[in-house]
Length: 501
Ligand code: MV4
Image (cartoon, rainbow, N blue to C red):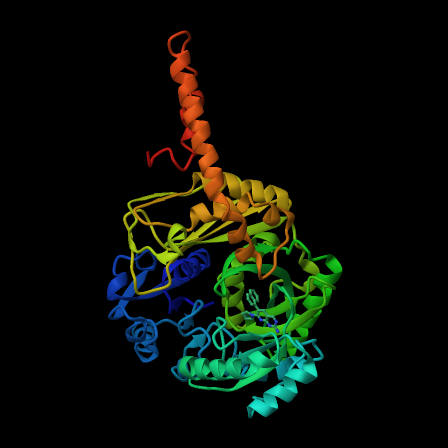
């Protein structure tokens, strides 16, 4: 087994990889920027090397510097985490050339899945359903008009190089097509340096369900069930759960088999994720894309399968066979993850950098916090503001929701704003509790929240009435004890407001 691994990443995912390495008795090498000299991943690793100034393209994206550190420290393998260099085929080639093992799939696989059109071709050849649409870039407005008409409106224009919804346009009818095409192409060019745009039929209010796959270098391919990731804000996942509230054993087996077909077709190695859009109308599903990395939301799959995906990645990179077969795997229970961001939900999710002056993590049954910070740590402006992924596990979805609600009451972060209050509201939301999750969830949730003002007025009136009643009763009877004094300090200590008052 490897004796030493370099982690080419930062934050919670670097810490996550270090944790598995430590259990496997593998020494760890961290790299960091000037902004991260006191970061948790630097403190947790056995060794740490400064690689440059705060901006990512001068530090975490400098592959030549990272490879130099790996050689100097004697690391035999590099784990890329997610983001940064994790899906960069050129980086993989350079790492391999330097005689170091890249923990992830081969560069040709990354390239095959890197473009949306090329990924669609691979899926079609593998016999997997893809969203009806083209696999060649549009050549003109006339071409777009004919193609869109042949699939029928509404259609989606998508940038082939796209990600994060960039260059994506929903087109309701032919009148909107010209503007949308121009906007999509110029956005694609500006974002990716490539203006190739193609057409897909639009799936109305789809669910985003993805299948975790795993492959070794001996031709074994398995899937580890699905994750429901429909709750997104500006194409960023916010809450994920496993299994999906709609997924039946049959649908899972069908989608899982399709995901494995895709993995086989590209000669996949390691941990990967096959994304699907699922129509709520008839549960038909369509391949969307494949992510060739360990994903942010991997912990919920770990919770319901009992597999340590990072350990498995390292074993597979070493050349071992998968430690389990498809028949060994069963999904047990239900897991929900909330991404805790240093953002202000009261202020349009504006980033909220600064020092964490207080950090109190939930404890007790069924909780897991994958954090990248500590009390006293500084959240900088340079990187993604996600400070932690908080997940709970329960025997079923209802227990997981109750547990998440309880744990979120215990969770306290001081000094910066976080998305925790937003999650507390979602856990009480009737549509969430029903499992009515689709890509329109967040905007409907925000609409439901809007009529808060009249309620606030009613609440104020009730408070005035109560105060009047109290002031009258004061002269004749003992004051009514408030809620606060009735609760024991132990119960109150689990309330988010306990220490902030
Ligand atoms: C779609 C779609 C409807 N029809 N494609 C958004 C991000 C990118 N990964 C794919 N996305 C979508 N593609 C077709 N043909 C709707 C979305 C979409 C979406 C998908 C999953 C989760 C949230 C979403 C929010 C808006 C749009």
